[in-house]
Length: 529
Image 1 (cartoon, rainbow, N blue to C red):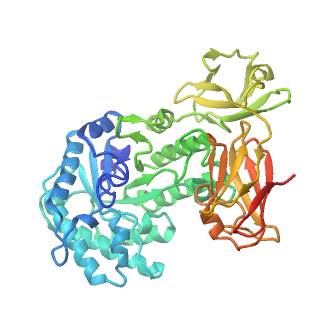
Image 2: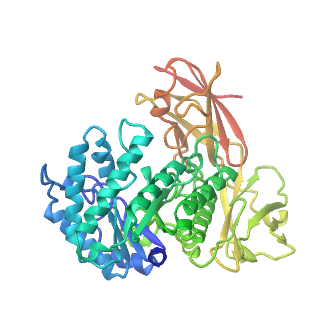
Image 3: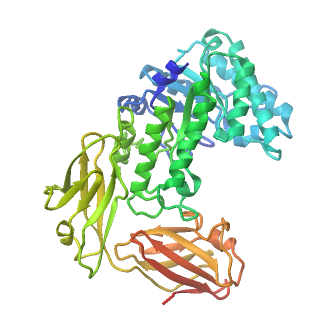
């Protein structure tokens, strides 16, 4: 099975298509085409995970018959994938939150439906190549019961799944099958419970799967974690090491069925997970997971590979992921240099993470810079000289140039040089919709996070364990329109009438104070002096 999983690496998820509800195009992706599948294979992927939600395509009890047209569509995409030379994984996906989650209160009905569904899937695909594998269920959890009960219920589903498929005959008698942990999580009790399931089944053709979306505060930009810092790195390595000890060390291979970040910046705006920090996460994770013999399957709901054009939206990110197959990509402590208005440029030193490569050259746009004059290298420290930067410390604010550090292997590391002045926030009123849209002159700077506390003390807004708010849930940023919006969700989680002090933290290191006061009916926020 380890050889089988090795052959599956790397993998890609056809997310938000057959798992979309109620139908294939409901979540914004175009219909899947044979061209798309062939192109994924041509990009170097060796396996494809096809998440399938069956909820809206099955009939009533007691038969729970799958709509023949839906089953035929699933089969068509599976067959296209096998024809393209890919290993294929299909599953029961969002059904885990639509009906299997009610198993504590509806055990008999859930088991009957689950049994009927997998009986039909197994029969339909029983004679397909063993390059097709089945995954029991996606990210299972169960309502209204404690963790120990949830683990017992998942064990019951996983065991039922294996017995159903094995009893269906044909290639299913030995087909590799994938079993998940509770919530597809990597917590030690989840790993131990699945290990016990494997031991009881004693089936040599089983594979474990978990998912990973990074250290949560980093992955969603909350609690002040705006960089891929030591805590985020430790979370990553601990997650991989624990699954390796639980499974791989015992002869059970592991597939990371999904990985990515929950919120990252695709547009170089620096408002969610900053671009360079995002690239460092993907670089380390894809390398480290593979070092431990995991196969990983990149979650893509359409944000990475454009399914209309069959092109990568972010070729640089794809280059980092692809490089992990044969080596590593070099990175640096940051991909941002800020040059403040009215301040003479000075030398800037960046620590390079060479990751086994060697530094080759530094370019300013299309112009090669001169070693010793424009920059120096001392071990892994790259110093960019003031003379090479000073020409960019004038004129309009914003990104002035991109410096490109090139290495002996992997993608170059791009360093964005920005001319900035102190950001300026202006007064704003709470809208009728309940949000506060604040006009901001960013003056070339980028927002990192926002801190919110009541003037009388205590953290304000959702996730009140921290004063630092979550991007998207509590605030959003629009550089093109020059606004920051404090969301209705934020104010819904505050005490009406209490004044709130905001601190806007920018990536240059500047902070700006801002106060929200008065009644929620007509509130004005003013930048603190």
